[in-house]
Structures are given as structure tokens and as C-alpha cells.
View 1 (cartoon, rainbow, N blue to C red):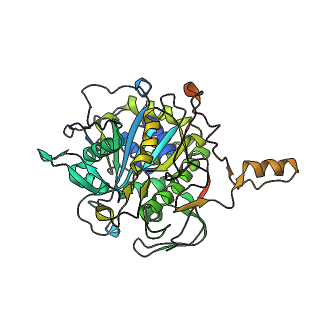
View 2 (spheres, helix red, strand yellow):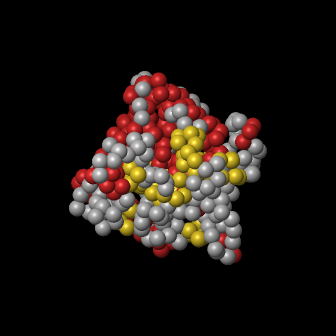
View 3 (cartoon, helix red, strand yellow):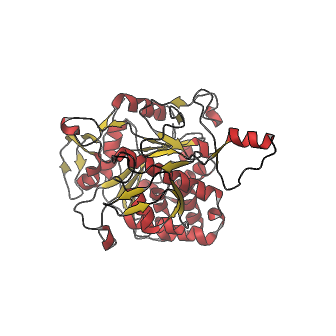
Length: 424
């Protein structure tokens, strides 16, 4: 598997856009699939002040339409923990770490999307990265992946993930804390199920068992908590974050957000000033193409997974996450081949999440209908993926989805799950 590495260009200022309403609607569509990080596009559609940065392979002139990109498209979403210009309540920190790093792949035929989360504590090789001030930084053989943003900015994070996955990543976006808060407010909150109490003294997140409508600082705190969920590792935090992201997708796709111009415009204004985009995203045509590719993907074909790793390592991996490269190769080969993926079984949601015990399954709903019993309309219906029968659909209808190793946890947006409180 080749690991392309290339140099990046310098910062440029985006052009003004005339059709704010149209582009805001596009932003809202994008939000429906990927969560807070994609929401930053709404910022760009209403503000000419958003910074952009050139990534590897970008050239002058308009970028290609998504439908013209062979093998689908890859987009990196980065959540920064920088407090610069942000709320004092976030505390003080030095540098600018990528708290969240997610890679989204959209199938060429727009039939599926796969979102891969990379543990922030995972120790990986970091290639030589351009120094924004000039020159370049030396490569490093083993560092946590979350230092890449402070080391060489968004271009360095892209280079590192390209080297790690063997994939080319032409699109990238970075969002900061305030953007996450304002986005969750704009959608009116996200319902999150908690199956065991969460109590995290580090982030101040305290949630009892039950369903909570999270927005604002509460939503941000939930997404940031690590000590409060699962085994206290970053792997547990990722699976807990996927509970939120899946619920966000369902909230917007099943609600009135996309047909309510006030909400759409609110999404566009929500993250203003909190985003940095790659130059390839500073194009209305590109964003329209991506939005059109995403909007009709069914919930069961939007899959969130975590890069596989172990917390039992020694040496440079002690107290960190050690990558399981062989298992990860199965995932990224599937993405390179433009295949949909399914986890080993529906319960393989990770240590920070469990299947919602109150969810009504399709089988249960069918039995209730056959017996004449009514089901509670407020209860969700879930569909368990079948690795043997699942196919990618569309032009790839004959291509079976790739069944992932047991070490790769995750869920689809159609599956209802709950965050699991700390058990250590």
C-alpha cells in the first residue's frame, strides 16, 4: 500500500460568494452526514474571512467535480483544541492539538459513506511537514497523531493520515470549540442515550442514565469526555462520540431542519470564524457536488468506525494507543477499492457504547404488527447489518461490502446506541 507524501502551498484568501442561501442549504445537507466538522462549510458560505490552506496536489483553477473523481472522494475532518480567541471556560492550553481526526470516504456511485476516527493518543510515524513559517520540519518515527496540527498545521495532519492509510486526501477542514457549540445550538440539540452514568471530573460532564438533549457547552463536553466513558481510553471516547454523531445524522435527516430556511441560515452562521478549509473546499461547485452525493445516502449506508488499536502496548506505546496495522489494512483496502464496510456484528460498538436496550428492532416491530399490537412511535427501529448479504448498491450493486475484523468497532447511522459510563 503506497503512502503518498507531498508538499503543501501557502495560505490564500477565499473569494466572496453571492448566493448565501443556496450555499447555506448545501452546508446543512453536508452536516446531516458528518456532524460538527462538516458544519464549518456553513461558515464559509456567509463569511469572506475564513482562512484557507493549500494541500498536497492542489492546482490552480477549479477542482474536479466529485462525480469525476475516480474511486470516490476522501475528506479529512479535524477538530482543534486551540483556545485562541475562544471562551475562557475552556481553560488554558499551549499549542494546537487535533482533538478529533476523522476521514470520510464517499463512494463513487454515492451509495455509501465511511467515516474513520483516529484515536488522538495513537502513536504513528509523522512525515516531514512544511513549516508555515518557511522550510520544513523533520520526520518523526513515533509520536501521538494529535501533535500534527501544532507541528505543521492542517497540511501536516493530512500528510500523516495519507502516509498512515495509503490514501490520497484532496479535501480537509478544521473546526474549533466555539464552532461545535454553535452548531449544536443551531440544530436545537442532539438526543443522546446514556446507559450508565457518566461522571468526568476533568471535563465536568455529569449525566445520569437516560436520554439527554445535548447542545452548547454540554454537547462539547460530551464529545470531549474520555475519563467519563468506557475504560477511560481514547478508544472509548471515539465510540461514545459515534453515539452522538449517529444521532445528529438522524436528527437532521428526519427533522425539519433542511426545509426550514431559518434553521439552515442558523447553521450557516453558527460556526462563523471558527473554520479553516483546504483550498479545494473553497469552491461552490465542489461543495454542491459533495452535498448532492451525500444527501440521499441511506442511514444504514453511513458507517462510523474507529482505527483499530491496542492500549496494552509497551515502550513508546505505554499509556497510548498502538496501531493494529494489519487489521487497519483491511479497512483502508476496502476504501481504496471503493467498497462499503460492515462491522463484525451489530454489538461491536466499542467500549464506550452499547446497543440501545430500548430500541425496537425490525423483527420485534414485525412480530408486534402480526399480533396486532401497537408499537411506541417514539421508539427507534434498527436494522442489523448482514455482512453476507449487504451490498454497496448503485453501480456497485454486485460488489459485497467488506466485513471488518473484530478489532474495528463502530456503527451505522441507522443503529441506535447509548454511551456507556466509565467502568474502571
